[in-house]
Image 1 (cartoon, rainbow, N blue to C red):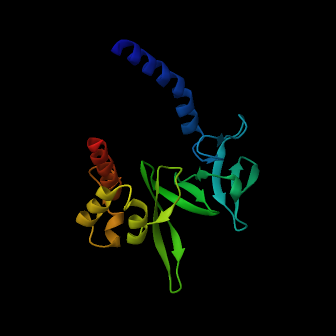
Image 2 (image 1 turned 90 degrees about the horizontal axis):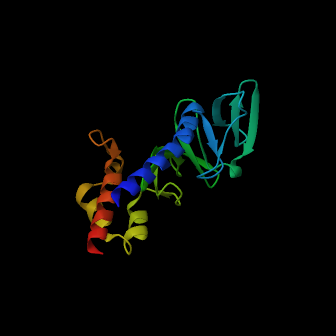
Image 3 (image 1 turned 120 degrees about the horizontal axis):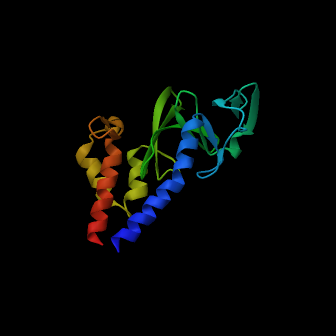
Length: 187
């Protein structure tokens, strides 16, 4: 029984290789949704993708620029290799895409501009600012283990953005995954 599964997995991998290679070739890219990527004509290369002052997403190719309304775009990667997700007409830099995603963007309150950190459950989920209140509102009924792990591992908000060099992951992402394993063991 294992051999047919392995053969099927190998065939599936071979089918995905052209898509993986294509994604690497068109390094800067634009996504209209989580699954639909915009590619330039075969005879051009995307040079960059960015948001202009008029809040339009620009795809720059050799000698041409294509403009998209920000509402038409789900996300993009620029020529520097930074990935962004568009959510409610704002761009958020994707720091880690996983079951628990971490984002950043410049934010502003009544007093100052600051670097805000945000999260979503999965790459397609709603975005929330990383605050104690948001964690309590979202997880108190669905994943209290995650809240317990946050309380044990972090003393203040600044801790939520700690990066674990050894695992190449944000600590909060690892804690979320750990909390999910705990829930699966209870089921």
